[in-house]
Length: 364
Ligand code: SAH
Image 1: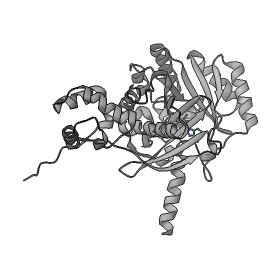
Image 2: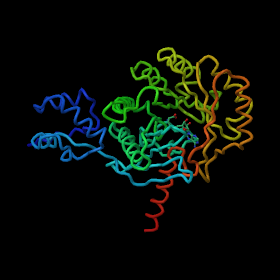
Image 3: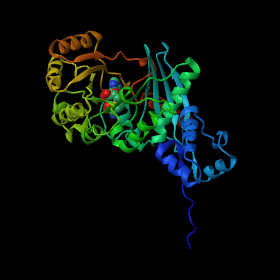
């Protein structure tokens, strides 16, 4: 005889307005209750149903029978000496950890969020790639990073978050459903209300995901991590290129522009002796000629001893930029590595923590 399993509780933080309205109706309540729930969860940051004081006690009891509200546990926070970046390490109920970064830059307040624990793409230069893939984050877990960073920003500086970039751990387009759901939650007026032009999704080049995103009504910014100018090198340092080579990636970028009317940003990481030659700069100008775009140069963040890639000297970076600018009509920017002092490249805080956890276990 099998005992009936209790139904799993639904995480209210993951539900879109129409889904919440349906749930509220099922529970025999009026639809406007859905708006109250959205304000508690995405606006006020309340996770305890019992604290939602404008809901009747009976309704709260009913809700607790079918639903809960998840929350990531903050386990570490690191502030960069210049105060330009605050890095957060969060723990999932399953024990894995992800990181998010709050970046202070002029008037901009940007939340850099993770989409997966680890990443399956195995880019050779990336700290997250070295972890392998552990799991996808739920929409609630993606959104919650923004909620928690925003709350900290408001409490400590009295400021509001202005931008979101999906440039933390993971490949967002390989967690497509949860990503898009999270981006729809973030732009709700009940919550952080960040959407459209203020959100950038960064991809290592998963072409089917780019083509699908181009057809969403979200009007997001798209960043593509190009990082190499020949298929030969890109195959080696970004294995996804073997499936979706540069020509296909550029065609997808052009399609994104034609459907969405938004310039794509190509990110290009400068690694000494690997991607930073004058020939690379010329090829980069050539490759991107057909796609209305911006080009963002990122000097490599070294991962530490025993890892092969190095940051070029600043003279080489400047020369690369000059050469590129002389040959492209596109806007070129150089990302000064904010928070390099707190190991800001994705996955690096996680790695440092894991090393400490491992050595603590070995010692204990
Ligand atoms: N998977 C997505 C988003 C995460 S990586 C993507 O690939 O775009 C975000 C950016 O950081 C990418 O442009 C990636 O090329 C870059 N990056 C990864 N490791 C880096 C490092 N050690 N130093 C500098 N940039 C790095």
